[in-house]
Image (cartoon, rainbow, N blue to C red; front, side, top):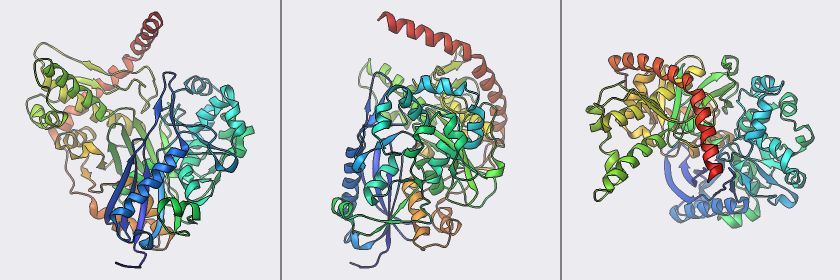
Length: 524
């Protein structure tokens, strides 16, 4: 039992789960409380989430943490919050929800994105934000609402993101952070809103909906009495608004530890690939894709490319095997099949097939944007068996990672890896050889919550700056470097040439198949 304020709570409100994680002031994780997230997918491409329910679930997660740690409320020095990026969370009079939030998964803004992308101001918007236009983003979604549902914007008083909504409920403050503000409506160099960007989106008349920008490494705000009653924490506890979850996860996993050329990939259901650079070294590709997202370190940003699907491709292949085996008897579990992967790779030939991992029905978003893109397996002959297919799928993830890093400039000198797939020796070997760079795995379990907790550790003075905090919280948890196999790296150099050539050549085929699917759908 203690009265000292020796804990920080990091809240990570992801797409699937809302987590509250307790850390001590030197970064040791002590306990986790989680609540499953809830959202609704519609036939019109919508993906929506209740604002009040999200806050209720967050409060439930915080109370659950109190059940795991004695005298939690008295021990909490500060709370920090991050969450799923993009999306549109509108609040109106009395900070009540205007409507259900549009999530980053929502595809309804696709026609508006197509129209804006063809506009004369699009390149200027991209060069300010460093971020390609897509249906995920609040700017695109608000522009679509402006054209088709203006009543939602008329009723709104502020446009927030997920973490901003939770921060509002914790503190009563309408705000956003420099990362989401700049890649959506601003300039990554200044970390402020940009008139050029807002005009390019056609949202000049809605500028009043954009909230104040606050930096959670410099400012905290007190927990309100109402929030204290709902969460079980003490009124007045300092609350810090973190940056978007992608960079919080990367910060916690080691995207920046002071080593030049380091990068970080999160390989889970989706793939997120990023490198930390100063703002003057950002590589803006000709295609206008990717993100530039600020880190909570002066003049340091992350360049980001994201695959729509990463391990979802492996899940598809294993489900295919399970279904076939199940028709003959008892189907093996997913875990049983995963345990076989390394053995299958030992019985297959590297680089024999080309697989494009575009298994998502939403197509691909990084390093190119094409909603019609679909997965393909190229080079099959009668001698190939299932182990060859599994290897090709895993190699496809390595090729996709290389494709993303190539769009951002130089290959990384070292890759820090996080996400569920980081536990697979086979995938680590493929990634190391695909990028021809050493791979290190972070032992940090809850990197997103840790990233925002690190911000508030600086804000409350536990550390003088973020770099010092990284020395304690991040660097010690990086595993030993796993060097790439030189022979395998040479094979993958050749494979990547075929991967890129086939990817470019398939573009018209994807379009033809999309038109065919649309025709078949109309008939049924």
